[in-house]
Image (tube, rainbow, N blue to C red):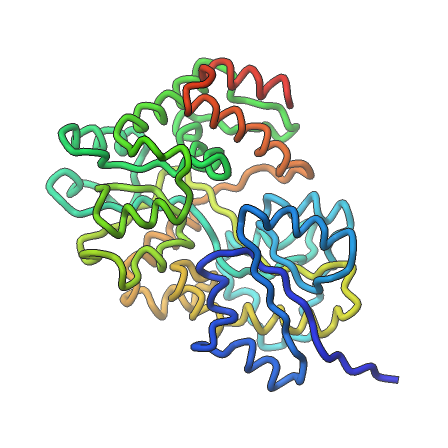
Length: 373
């Protein structure tokens, strides 16, 4: 007896890329529903509340498909049996190899596929073209960035840090990497509590002097607003935010240019099959459709970061930042695969944020993290 599936439930994170999926202008959910006769309940939860809702979904069945922050969460979720392996057998024309290789690496663990990509987020410098920024190339070092920001000594708040407690760990990561440091060893040891780590953090604090005093609460939306309204000369944001930054609300967007940070990091928000799902076949079929070449092209246009090589190539003239974003992806380095990466980042973020606000010293923050870990 064949049981006809009437509906599937999707849990998605709030982000510009995700807005595409249930936007009637594109009609993607409607198309799937019409072709498959399966209703799609697509629920978007804000980033700040998403992880909590995601954890609930693994304890009690509600959602068939969920979104996962790539390599940051994959190992933990697989080891805890939260996710079902994908077979790709139902997607003969999916063209998995069209996905950027460095993104594909985030979708698999021990040779098995668990994720299909929605969009990537990696560090991109957005800057206004001027005599002081004219020598910035496609790639910029932290040392070069600091020098350029300092050249705007007379300007009011020429730079912005994405320094909210939910963002600061990853915002700081390139500064540590610039000094040859990774936050954790492959064995899970904390590697930043040393003179070099202190120096790297202090470089970040140097740039704080050139920022709005409220940057301790700045996330994606706040950074986007100051770029669009010409309140800053330079800003580092996520590649998956560039489409939103460059929308019609952006003032003089032709004056903006882009570079990727040396030794970049990225993660790929992806769709995963909840192991509790009672509708795995239909849910997996939806995942193939919603991450197909056609849908990915629209996601890239809207958020700024497609995941397929064919879409980078097709629209590289239309979206000036695509070339830089692809170079960032190719040169990116992931964090180690830890089953407790989420809790490690959380431990670091709180202490980093306290040091940024001047509540404790950098040395105290790094000491506290080492004790916690």
